[in-house]
Length: 471
Image (cartoon, rainbow, N blue to C red; front, side, top):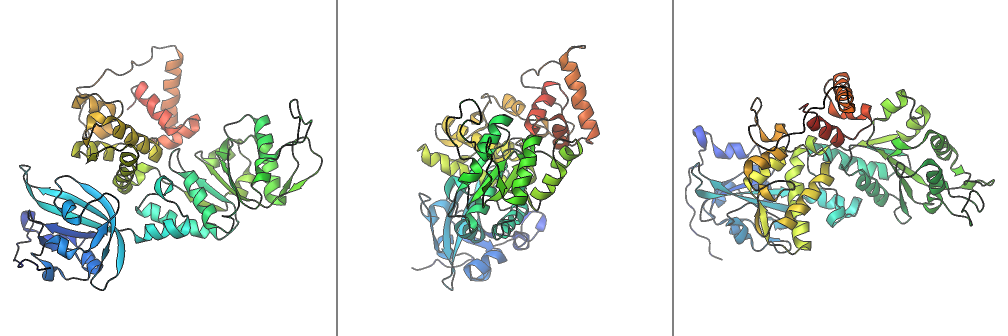
């Protein structure tokens, strides 16, 4: 195929900065294109990926320089390079030396201050590490994949195979909705126990009497209604892994029995007189601060030390902001395909709102928001009014989000629906307000620790703070 003649292009950016030196600082492959999809320049990271020097390809059509294929219905490379809206499509590229690399293509138009399109920027993200992890470590695909490329998530990806190589007890911590169950299942699937059961038990979902029978089983006649022997979850998980989620809510009496199981690998079923031996790997998870619960006498210190051998802490989504856009694109692709919706992406304003939203429900909340917007949006671009709970008018849309997201520091909101009134003196509302203030003061303003001291989730504390006008 004949290539067009190359041309000399001025790569000086705003204020006289050299564009090439700026994009060289980006840890992904970057290519700048003009309005005819010809290469203006590219960075050193992309030079290494494709095997061409930037001087060799300046002025050449981008589709001739980037040789590869797109997955699914991404269309042709020429099509996405000419996109007038942001597009994110997975695929792979082939370098000059014929090395194939899985990448994520991110294309956005370059606009002048007046809004006129003057070209495009192509960012190629090398996802070979994530792909290898998904294929070889935990085998996840689709909705079950652990998504993330931030530094904090990379640390977790490195810990998963380490935890999988041993039978040592693992404690997974993190706020509600961060994906603790996915990490636990990833460890199981990568371990030698992967061919045996993975059993999940929520320790906070059942009363103590039922939970003991659920975990350890019971014999016939152990209690009213026990008309036959029933194996517990520990027995069903024999040879595999039992995942005890919300371990911080386990009653003290059962904590003693669990400690015996950890030490002796055997237990008595409810009402039984014969011990049962098991071979089970235990992974526990909690959103609570177990150190504080130990100090408060609500969790046994010896059990805490037995569980906390290997610890994996999953950061909240607000601490891994680099992953928000990646998750948005992933969930958008999942839901628009399952719902057969022709949606191009998110508008700039929608992305601004979602990127600065604190997501108290973490990844689970983000996923639910995207599912809602895909259902509501008729097609084209997702706008702020398509977000859950938002009216069509922009001022009301901004009011739906916390002040830290919709306003600049020091700016006062002048629009939006009236907030809940401050409780009148003397009632429960005033007592609750005082409790929140005291908890925030004792935690130095840390909302996570304040919520834990009140026995609430962080999202509940956030709602109460808004209710009592304590923002």
